[in-house]
Image 1 (cartoon, protein in one colour):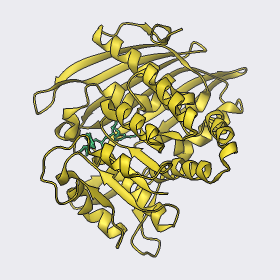
Image 2 (spheres, helix red, strand yellow; image 1 turned 90 degrees about the vertical axis):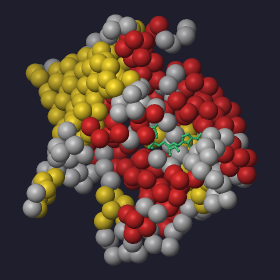
Image 3 (cartoon, protein in one colour; image 1 turned 90 degrees about the horizontal axis):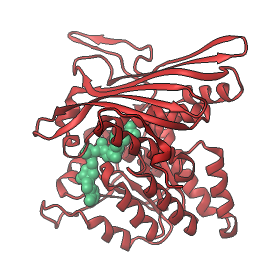
Length: 390
Ligand SMILES: NC(=O)c1ccc[n+]([C@@H]2O[C@H](COP(=O)([O-])OP(=O)(O)OC[C@H]3O[C@@H](n4cnc5c(N)ncnc54)[C@H](O)[C@@H]3O)[C@@H](O)[C@H]2O)c1
């Protein structure tokens, strides 16, 4: 199958393209196209030294192609979709507010979709995507890669086997480095709860199977270097279907000199029939300390690394790779199945709940939509029933 990635920014460079290149090297998928809105984006991706070192001899088709000057071509991806044969794979890797139009366009051109998180910004859009995909027997997988961290899968298995009893209180945080403020994010990221808070909300559902019912998000407005304002510090409280409460703090505020690429983790306090139970994940400090001369780092071997397994090039490893591979393999599996069994396979994927799909994860859209209402109202308590139409 052919793969077209729409968007050539940070997540495409750091995770998506290398993962898909590796699948191409393994013979699992065919030609790759990356379509951005500007020529300079795909030029910089094509000349990325790390990617060239890891995948010698592999290339993607770049759009806009060299004949285009560096004007913005926001509709070019539609042309690329029109030229694709049906039932290939489109990866949506554009800023959050563009996910809906890119995903719907891909589905209407009969393409399977892998979408970066959050799927979309509104609950009703998730439902529309679910219906469009269902009517065409197409896969839509939402790339919540923390699900493919083995510690999340271990927690899910143990929680669902009753080891931790019932979730009661939890705290999670995901703080990105200060320098993110200087990136392209300043052009589109208006609040950090929508951008990164969704990870741990999704993970608590993934582990426990509980559903969120109420949300309040307090946000502190701050200025990006380009003068745009955003809620760059947020504190959220999520109430769950069993009455449990999760606190999630997010920011673009970790000092650039801090070790590791961010600060993040999850602690869940639970209750069994005989006493308390505890699950604690440090997702930033994975036990590694590297230092030399004036540099000290605490790298994570778990999300995404390139390792030398004897070549050619380097092999991407980690849950960032496994997550992309899992979603693309589901597209391949559905496409290789007999047409009459595809809808059954798709329902099985929804029910298994390992891969986030519009049908099994639209609680995420309810939470971020309610979160935006709350944040604009000083952190008011917003029941999700007020967002979901009856
Ligand atoms: N942890 C995660 O799962 C994770 C991490 C980072 C980003 N993301 C998500 O990935 C998405 C993109 O983030 P990023 O970090 O790559 O952002 P970015 O700002 O670095 O890149 C966005 C890209 O989209 C492209 N783009 C914008 N409009 C386009 C259009 N009309 N057609 C084609 N391309 C267009 C831009 O050229 C740019 O290359 C966001 O939704 C973000 O939330 C997820």
